[in-house]
Amino acid sequence: MRRVKLSNPFKSRIIDEELIREHLALERTKLANERTLLSYIRASLYLLIGGIALIQVKEYPNLVWVGYVALFICVLFILVGISRYVVLDRKLNKLLEPDKEDEDGTSSKKKL
Image 1 (cartoon, rainbow, N blue to C red):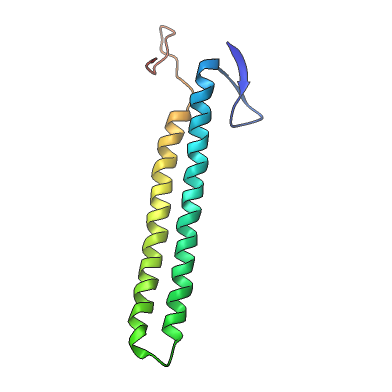
Image 2 (cartoon, rainbow, N blue to C red; image 1 turned 120 degrees about the vertical axis):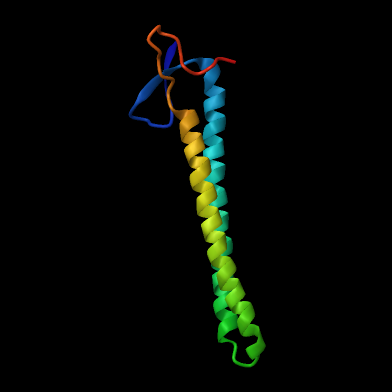
């Protein structure tokens, strides 16, 4: 086995060269997860701005409730985005943990 640097440039792990592709796919998934969180934040900010603008319109008092609905949906978007990010991040971190050796020297993770 070769020593390959993955994810942390200051700490190297021993990893099969066959597993590098799988590890890189998991890293791409982490980046996609971060990009999705940023999309949720962006949509939430748009709803926040739109909701505040609708609340401040004085000429159409009937639109105030739409502004409050937009603010409520804004809060929902940010909560859903953060919760989905945290759940997937925890799952990915479990997959990226190094294999733990059993007492007999075999790996605890199943080989494919």
